[in-house]
Length: 367
Image (cartoon, rainbow, N blue to C red; front, side, top):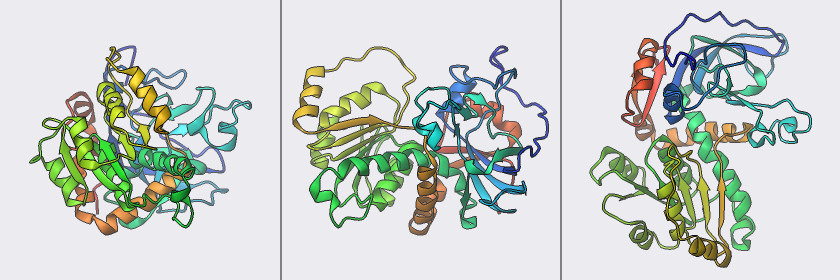
């Protein structure tokens, strides 16, 4: 992506080389495409590394290790790995980055592979430090690229559990992260929403997906096939949806639509938690009954927080959960990747309307 020229094109890039003892050279296998990539391709977002006229796009990756530096211990030749996205700001006063939790960076000067100030993964080969790599089990080769988008839900649920431990009946004797039968509403049936629904299901949440698709849409049928419930926003209001669900203990927002998200706050239940994960594209005003929302938050002990970029703990949880999903729903998990494209098709893919669920640029054949 060349911001000054406002063009997206394929270029010859210098071959990356190991420079530090902890560096790892990987060959890229798959790179997922998400809404952020499309925004970058529309020049709404994204910044190249200092001194570079272009930004190599791509932050959802799956790769194979080709070469390791002499001090590398976390990965070995042939391993499947996922590269993390956000990198520390480098300021000694940043308590988060100094503790390897750049996902909570205080300064905002972090960089992100394929997004902000650092080249991404939509290229044949990449060199990275071993501490930013996570090993993925080999049997997840076909769907390992889903680890990064799944980290959004994983980080959210780690925080949800930290919050819900304040309620005495949810903590004692309950496995960490268990939904213990609570009811969850997922807003949106894109990849982040559907992966979030799976993460909620394996934790025991009674899971409902609320999205614009009709009841006979493939996404709706997919939701029902994994044991969740689908409610069409085209025919059912939020209030009616909440009536079907009962007390909504958790709302996991994955739409990026501010109007939908904030109006959904009105149906959050007693002691409920609302998680924002979407980044709105539209910045226009929306009408809200702010007084009612504030009243509910105070009197019903509700909590609202936002999250998107993940740390090492969420990446590990995503790899672990993806293996659980694969064992429980192998067919449905594979169906989340609806299209694979060759690298030369990437510019057209990035600049065309989104279709299907998850599109992937594949640098190597699966198998």
